[in-house]
Length: 445
Image 1 (cartoon, helix red, strand yellow):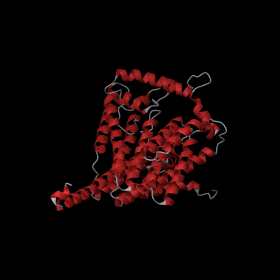
Image 2 (tube, one colour):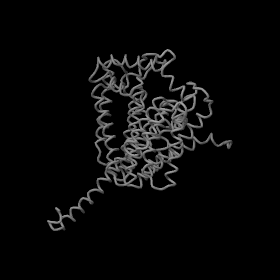
Image 3 (tube, rainbow, N blue to C red):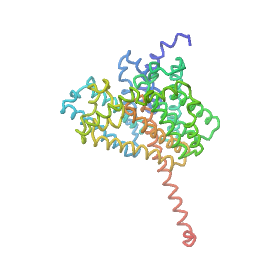
Image 4 (cartoon, rainbow, N blue to C red):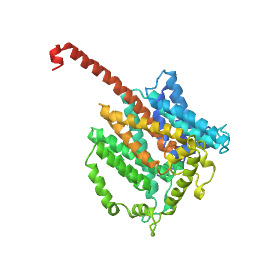
């Protein structure tokens, strides 16, 4: 903008975050609102490293929200997801020590140990889920959480599009891709975030009644889809197409023929660079291109490790400690990673958690009477549908930048379910009272 104040934005954000930590002890819900925009914006948070405790400021903020909630006597809504997360956290920690016993990893004693740091960062997400579940207590708070999340998506869209459109995309060039505002999550992580929340917003807007708000949200959906397109992630493209078809099945049937028509003519409507990226899956000889072949080789090698340790795996966080095919340190498939590192037990717990999330979202969509709850439920169901697909092509589950906002929204969803059930009880009681007041022959006509 040429004002010269851009240099001070990271410092201002750091000071605001510090203030939010103090405020959270008094008004924990305000602390949650302040935290949401920072969760995906990794490049901004990286600037905090220049200031005291900057690397742990998000953890401190979450802890302050939890402490503030406890001081005010707030309680968690009933949800089996909290128990599953606790079980998963304990199992993963024990799995790290299994890796030590198998000589696959160093002892996880301090935050400087790579495997322990990985576990600590992963466990920040269930803490966010707990914090959101405790401090979001009514419909108004749920509405504001969705609004702040939408605003945060707008910030990511803006930064992503400015970064993408600053390059010349007459032809595809892998070297021009990066993680944008998500930084460490990488270009595919950015694409996963955009695809998930594009479908979340698209589903949510189906239940918005006000014309002006509907138009604004559709505009945000379009911007997020455009940013997804210029992320050049084939997995994100697949996730969006599947998500649109599922949305068509559940809510808006006319989307199904539109999606089918798009699949027939997509090469004539998308930019040339996008078409080139999609067609890179195979080379001129019909063989897999280099990156796709590397993943296949990686999964083949991982299969042998899984077969040798099928029950408990080789230890959580151990795969990254050694180089594998093409010096890769990630399985490029979250399900393979879970099975390899934590075995069948870890996979069962992980899938149970995902199943609970899907059921919670679907419950709100089907049983919620309030359009806000129904939109939140359908949006989260579509988000999880995309996530299930995206995690087949890489770890898009353990990154705070990608899934941090997801867990805030699921905390709000857990509270929404409790509100739906609470509202349903008086209605049932009123129905029973009306029935009992009727003459018997009228009640059973």
